[in-house]
Structures are given as structure tokens and as C-alpha cells.
Image 1: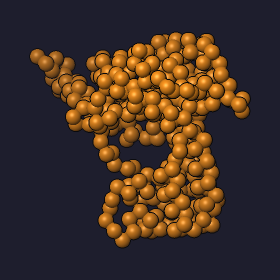
Image 2: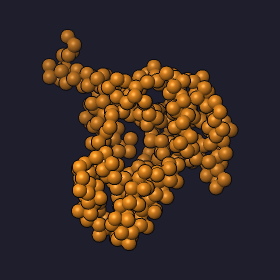
Image 3: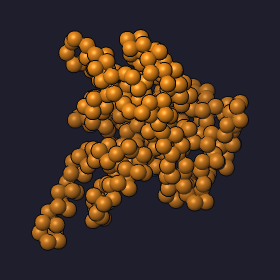
Image 4: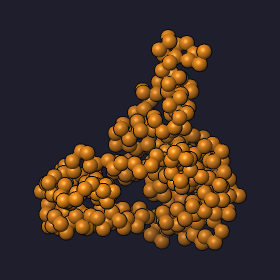
Length: 318
């Protein structure tokens, strides 16, 4: 497929998920102008990509943004059959983290999920109601979903009798089944039983979580509400991490808390890591292994387990 057509498909797909996608869209259009919109996706060379990423100047954060935009586009193009392979150098495919994710404490989570704080955050909001917003937050943390996955769920994607969610067309363009625990399944069932869980969009789509008019939740609306909620709940970042914890960090917190629980239970974490990777919808184990070093508590649990193993099962704290 021609590059211009493939980029148009990709931008439309991303914007249909409720994101503005402005920065990446502009970068992709800039790349298209440099390489040529009529160029076949499989005819683009690595040298052309490198010329766009770096040019004649030094490496900058702007270059990393370009690499991130191109990597996302080529994953989409390959999954849709628009291209056979990515011309990006391997070193360019994963952008560096600016700051480690914020891992919420249990106390912070309780304050974020407190209906009183959520009600304060939603004052003056027309489209988002308390029940829908709280259910979304519990879904992001309780099932470790990405925002686009949670807001893209249809009512038919929720098999509450089996406590399983069907996540379709995810970040890496694959579908997966996500089992949920009984507490979260109960929250989802309660939401569906209320009027907020029975809305339909003008096009007939029945989103599990929706605006008051039945349309899909927009990231800008929810992000504004979350920023207010974070202040109402007095949730702040740690000195070594982000100053403003993000909504996406609920997903990171789910993963770290799950790993920490496994270590404390004495489970074989290395054996279970691929299970967590599949559950989270990661494309490979590398994205999941990052969580192993995210908190001092997790590192401490891992070192204690190693010490017990090294001493033939003796308690490392003895």
C-alpha cells in the first residue's frame, strides 16, 4: 500500500479510539512529505528513516518522538497487511522513559476510588457521571487495562457469568481474553444494571462505559476529571518519580502489585511472568520485565526469595 493511504488509515483508527493524536499525526505527515506519499510502504529504506529521525543534527527528544510515532505506525501497517516489515532500526523501536511510572500505594488507591473525592472532581462536568468514572478507574487498576481498551469495551464484550472480558484490536492489534476477579465482576455487573450501563450511542454501539449521551468516553474529558480527582484525593508523586501521577499508572500499579503478591506468596515469578505478559497484552516479555525493578519493595521481595533459595530454603531474614 502507498504510504499516504496507510498513514491515513492509521490516523483514522487512532482518532476513532477517542484520542486527538495530533503530535504523532503531524510527525507522520512530515515523514510522508519527506519520503513521498506515493511511495510503497515496503520500498522505504532504513536510511530514509534514519535521515528523518536524526538528519544532520544531534539526537534529541524530538527524534525519540519521531521514532515512537513511526514504530506505532509500522506495527499497525504490518498487522493490517499494508507492509511486510518495519524499516526502523531495532534501537529506535522503544522510546526511553522520561521518568519511572508512579506506583500508587494502597492508601492512595483508596482515596482515588472514594466516591466523595470523585464527586468533587466531577463538579461542573456535563458528560461524565460518578458511577461511570469510578467503574473506569476500578477497571484500569483491577484488570490492568489500557485506557483505550477499557473505553472501547462493548457490553457484549463482558461475560460476567464467566468473569471474562474480551479485549479487541488492542495496542498491538491483537484480541485477548482477560479474566477478572469476583470483586471487579460484581462492580461491572452493578454498573450494567444501572441506567448508566444501558446507554447506546447514536450509531447503536453499546459501550460498557459511556458519556451521558451514550458516546464513547473521550481521553481529554476523562483526563481533566482525573487531574481534579488527583488533587481532591491529595495524591502526589514520589520524590524519585513523576511529580504528577498519571491515570495510565493505574495499569503499572496493577502489574507491580501482582508481582509483589506473587513474591510474598513464594510463587515462581519467572514461570508466571509470561502469564502476566499475556494478560497485559504485551508484545514480548521485555515490556513486562521492566516491572521487576520498579519499586524498592518489589526488589526487596525478590532479593529475599533469592536469599532463601541460596540458603536451601532458610528464611533470609534470620
